[in-house]
Amino acid sequence: MARILIGLEDRMLAPGIEEYLIQHSYPAGTEIKLLHAIEAEEAVYAWPSDQYRKDAEELVCSMTERLKQRFPEFDVVGEIVEGYAKEKIVEIAKAWGADLIVVGTHGKQGLNKFILGSVSMEVLSHAPCSIVVLRYPVASTSGKADRQDKVTAFK
Image (cartoon, rainbow, N blue to C red; front, side, top):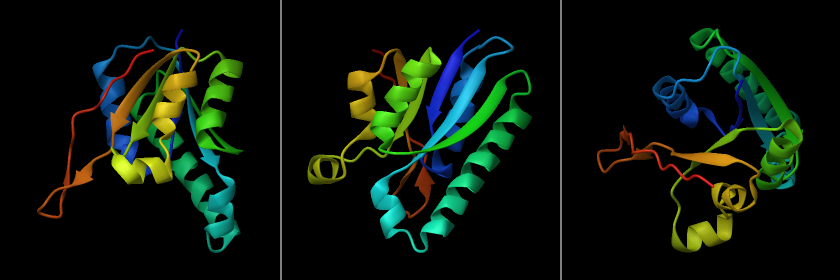
């Protein structure tokens, strides 16, 4: 039985998660944990902070239900934690005994990556197991979201 921890930032990663799970054969009973971390800055800057928590709960609940319906053979749960995503993903992966971590990347480079940090790179550096990094869809010059190839990194 596999245990897959998915770091969930927003709904944009949903198609990539589903595509990844379809392309890889995991046995019935595979445990999937969707994890969303509420970071201190988000709680402070979100207006109102109660609304941010409600939005996070709705995100996790809707994604959990979406995956349960799409993959009834898996045991899917959602969890919201407070703290820095890059630290919480690694911490929970270790405590839970994850076999695989799935995270997304927006593909930021240069100064944006330096200023905003990179959760996927930090998790890759400290994870206790293999990691799959999925690239979020990006806007094309036409203004529509284009699918980009996923980036896979294994530790």
